[in-house]
Amino acid sequence: MVEDVNPAEGSAMEDDEVSNMVNETDVDIEELKLEDADIEINFENEFSEANPEDGEAIDPSDADTTDNAESATATVAELEAQIAQLKGQLEDRNSQYLRLTADFENFRKRTSREKEDLEVQIKCNTISNLLEAVDNFERARAQIKPQNEGEMAVHKSYQSVYKQLVEGLKRVGVAPMRAEGKEFDPNLHEAVMRQPTDEHADGTVIEELVKGYVLGERVLRHAMVKVATPLED
Image 1 (cartoon, rainbow, N blue to C red):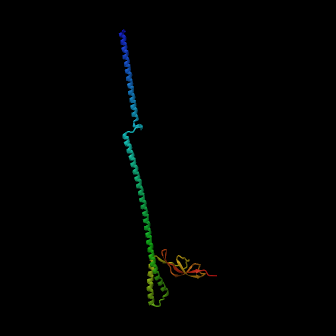
Image 2: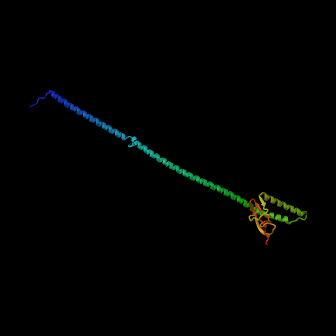
Image 3: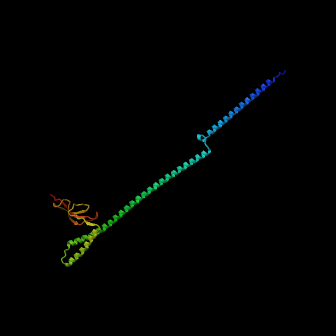
């Protein structure tokens, strides 16, 4: 037996089913929107996590920049090491130059001093040999007594030679010591005789037997002298 359905009720049922379907569709659409929103949120989060400003993700271009920076740093360090090495070499060269300059200056001074000493030594040896001639002239003047005009002429001739010799020695700086009456000095005098006396103080040169000479401050020949000693009681 088939139940009769009221057309109005049938329409109401259909409207309810359609409304339910629409509602379900709206729910599905809302869920899809929510899923889309979640996807967008997740995408934004991932994008923000990959943002270089956060320092968590590395862009390939940033990796190249880092490599370049490291390479530049290594190059700078290498150049600084080379500069330090060159500075060290320059300091070594300067030190060697200063040492060589000082050694050369010392060598020059030593050579000049040795040359001067050699010249003085040669001059002293030459003059010392001439002093014997001076001694002979002085002995002759003391011993020879001219008796006539001929002898006087000879005497005057060799005395003029003696005078020239003495003047030449004076010009080169030779001078007699004049030891008589001075205190005995072993650096200048050579005591060949001692005479006890109370007329002179002990150690006084009372007679110059052989004249001594100096060249500047250098002794050419020691004076041979007689020295006073005290009387024995």
